[in-house]
Structure formats: structure tokens, C-alpha cells
Image (cartoon, rainbow, N blue to C red; front, side, top):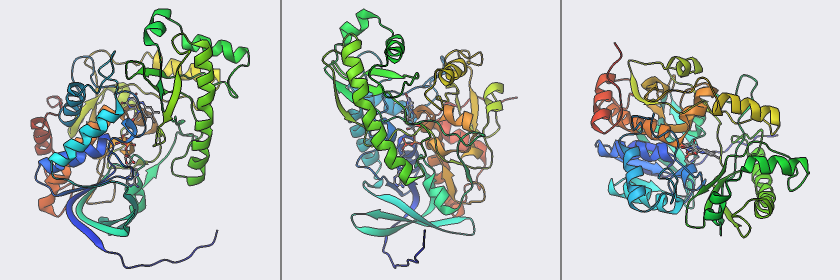
Length: 441
Ligand SMILES: Cc1cc2nc3c(=O)[nH]c(=O)nc-3n(C[C@H](O)[C@H](O)[C@H](O)COP(=O)(O)OP(=O)(O)OC[C@H]3O[C@@H](n4cnc5c(N)ncnc54)[C@H](O)[C@@H]3O)c2cc1C
């Protein structure tokens, strides 16, 4: 591959206290919290809606909302759940299930209410930084290339794109470089849920039988997350996997979209012919964001790790708690890998009891070697096992809210995210509704 040099003078489209890149659950929580704490905030999002995986990606449900006793995503997370429920935006059978179209509007309203300067179809494309300080981001939109300046930057892109472009260290995958598969979630209509429920079928058993008969599927994939009831006759599906997915590689992602779309008609034929209640069901659409479970983990001042999960670690600087299990999807479609996943996640001895959780230290948000850069959501500083726990959306609300509060608190010290006393951050988060246990003795 040859290179060309490219230089251009571009307009500065705005100057802000806090710039948040990415409007998923983490970015929303960060932007709303920073704005509520007095900051002038810009929020940029590459799609046409907020919510990330939970809306454009059609991820069907919030998981890990509580530890069985405590509501863990207090504050912005609680507000989102309550508003979604009040707006009839949850499923007919479960309040954790998401009607994506309703959630999109709720996020629009929440962001607009805080006078946040937000912009859709705006892709963070480059970052200008010097001496461990980010000074501006470069965006691409229908207006061409523009720069946005800020004192503090929050990377809520899921993929850690802002931090990586700034030159931050990151890790991807497990010890062998393996990355969890992705899933293109999808929406289905005309499901007879009453018939499905009363038949009490095991879709896993039906799938296994069809694999033995060599029916429906090009490649048997034993891990089947399933269909969620999102309406009277509607389902949102988290089914099918694309393996060896690397969302930091354009060619890999292009192939993944094609492969994932080709899988869905196989499931449609299977469900219609084999699963009670789905005889007349139809695939309506697939997500407009690819369901990426894992990519860059940006290295922070601390790396939250699997030992912290097993020890239920507490930290002096914890900004929240989480208890969702270590959920590493199979690395390939085989029965052996599915059995490994089942032993680790579905039937693990390590499952937490009610009320148990691990602490989330602030240091996993502060990016190593950078003064004014924070991460939030899926790309925070963890090992790959902890990423598979904290990545679920309530976890992203927790880290997003803390990043937004910290960004606002950093403003008097020129955006230095290590400039204020952490006990003060904890106190302000508690007042904003965060669930933070009393300090460990
Ligand atoms: C298939 C699948 C199933 C899942 N199931 C569940 C579940 O049941 N329950 C649960 O709670 N969680 C689930 N998750 C996990 C969860 O949805 C994600 O980990 C979570 O949404 C991550 O939140 P985030 O805010 O960090 O990133 P995202 O939700 O990925 O949001 C990032 C946002 O940043 C934007 N963005 C990215 N790059 C740029 C850029 N360069 N410029 C501008 N904007 C950018 C994206 O468009 C997106 O809107 C699932 C994930 C997948 C993939």
C-alpha cells in the first residue's frame, strides 16, 4: 500500500467544555451528566439516532440492571428505564426488553432538554493531540471536514476510536488474540407468541435436530441467544454469529455485513417450519449498526481484571458496582465451544449471590498518559473477561455517568481529569442517583 500526504485548513465548527464522541448508552449518560453539572457539551454521533447498540443495533434488552437487591445503574440509567416504561417502550412480557423506536425518542428528548449541542451523521475521523492533551477532533459530515475543540474529551464510541486516534494504548481480544463474535440483530413480525409460549418448545433442541438432519443451515452454530418479545406480534432477535469479527478493520466489517445478512433467511426458514408460533413470522429488518461485542479496550490507570470479578474487589475510587457475569460468547460455532460457554456463563460456580457485586474504579476511565481524556462504555480499561461483563448497557450507563461528572469537575483545572479529589466525585455521583456502597473498611 502506498501513502499520500494530505493537509487542509478546516473550519472550527465549535468550542466546548466537554466533547462526547458516540451517542450510545455511555455517551448519552456522559453528555447529560456533564451538561447537568454546568458544562457546555457537544455530542457527536455517526448514525441518525442515539442509543447505539440498544437502538440502531437492535439489541433487544437491558441486562444486569440489578444485583438482585440494588438497582446498579442509578441516576441516568434509572431515568432511561423509567421513561421507557412510562412511554410503553418496554416489552409486553418484560420491562427489560426494549422497543427501539421508543427509546430513540426518549434519548432525543433527554439530550435536547439539557441544551446539548448534538449532531447526527457526524463521524469522528481524526484527533489532534499534543503532549498528552487532546485539543480537537476532526469530524466528517455532509459539511465536509470540520474541527471541534474542547477542554475535556469523552470517548464513548464503543470501539475506543477517539483514544486510539489520539495515540492511546489499547488491547484487543483474549490471550490468543481471539475476539468474540458479533451478531446482526433483527426485527420480526407476525409471531404468535401465545402459541409459542404454550408449546413450551426448546429452540436449542429443535436446532440441534435440524443440524443432525443437515437442514436449513450452511454452518451449524450451537449458540442461540434467541428471540425477545418486543410487541404484540413482534420479536427482536439476537441470533446468528459472525466469527473472528474485527470492527477496527474495514474489509472484515464489510464481509461481516454480507455474511450476517445471508444467515438471517436460514433462521427464517428454520423458525417458520420448526418453531410453534412462527409459522407465519417474517423477518422485517436488520440493525443499521452491526452488533459488535468486543473491540479495543483502552488502557487506563488501572485495568479491571478477572481476579477483581472473582474477589468481588472493592476500590477506594469506585464510582459504581456491577454484577453481570463473564459472558464470553463461543469463539467458533462448534458444540465444544458452546459447552465451554455454557459451563463458564450459564452454569458457572462463580455466579454472584444476590447483593454481590464488584467495584468499578474511576481509574479505568482515565486514559493512561492523557490529561483530558476519559473513556466510557464498552472501551473502558479492562481485561477481555471483564469487558464481557461491564459492556452490557447498564454498565455503560454507570461508566458514562461517572465520565460526564468527572469531565465537568475537571473544567476548573484546564480539563485535568486527575485534578479533583475522588471522594468529591463519589459524593456528587451519589447525589445524582448513582449506587455507590459506603467505603470499604
Ligand atoms: C449482539 C449483541 C447483543 C447484546 N445484548 C445485550 C443485552 O441483552 N443487554 C445489554 O445490556 N447489553 C447487550 N449488549 C451489549 C451492549 O449493547 C453494548 O456493549 C453497549 O451498547 C455498549 O455501549 P456503548 O455506549 O459503549 O457503545 P455503543 O452502544 O456501541 O454506542 C457507541 C455509539 O458511538 C457511535 N460511534 C462509533 N464510532 C463513532 C465515530 N467515529 N464517530 C461518531 N460516532 C461514533 C456509534 O454509532 C454508536 O451510536 C449486546 C451487544 C451485542 C453486540
